[in-house]
Length: 422
Image 1 (tube, rainbow, N blue to C red):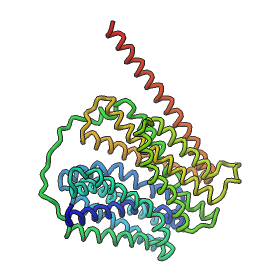
Image 2: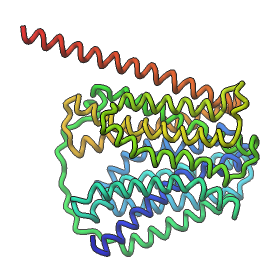
Image 3: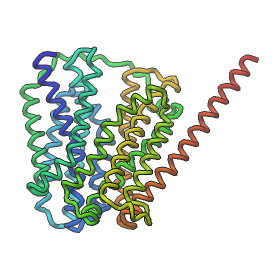
Image 4: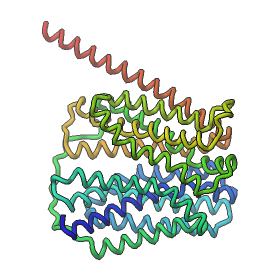
């Protein structure tokens, strides 16, 4: 890698880190600002959850744009739209009317999410072009790690800047950095002459979705994804009221989840390479998430568990369970394509990744909306406890169904083999 390629690679990684921070930075500061203007927790959940629904819709469209206009242009436009969305979101500090605050925050969050949706699918091809073929895996790992660093740092950075300069400071600071990346990328990011090689399209969405075990993995991911954002709109108001924490301290607590996820994901990868099956890992992960929900509330009647250390532990446990569930569902989807006899090509892997991302964002969106509504109706303890029962119950049902289906397939194959031999 020469100096030019190194600089290009740095631009891509910084863009991914800022994109990750843009996803997570509103979480510890937006709900309290919304409540102070008369906006309900349910409405806050809609605003935060809209980013995930937007990602589901915008990600396939960004893939089309890459094919038409190239990855660099789409990357620059994505970063620019993300910057404009963050700067506009900071202007909400001047809006006091509840209805205007809600609708404008929803619009600006969707705008920002459109930009965020364009950064990830373009960063991977742009970054991989800067290294040789033998270093492709390392490059993709570093790019993915950059996004995780942004996600981890976002809540703490948002809370710190919020205490320092008010509601607008985190979003304006992030917006300025994104604009700087746009300028540097336009003037200094150079690509080799691009030659397009179209892959033979032999995989259909229908064949992927009908592959053995694919639907079970999608359901497992929807369950885990809903829990990840179940308390996103309610956690800060509850912690501020219950434990008298400020936004920065809430952000630090949320970092426990992100750090646990970032550390445990590769560890679970090694464990699964050693023989742990995806379906068992999904069961373990989702049941761990269920336990974390009972501790976070905690379950009504267990008031002796109400403390900041227990809440922090619950968030860490949630991160561990999420790492197992998310990784296991992705590997399980890839395994399903093999069982279904689908060709193992880059196209297939890309389509599987798209299904995984859209399922994750759909679950997160449903968690945001439903979690905020349950909080408004029943309070934080029951909100977390209900999700704990739902995650645990649905996971056990899913696991039982998957085992039954696996048994039927094996039994059917055995009968077929016996009939053939006769």
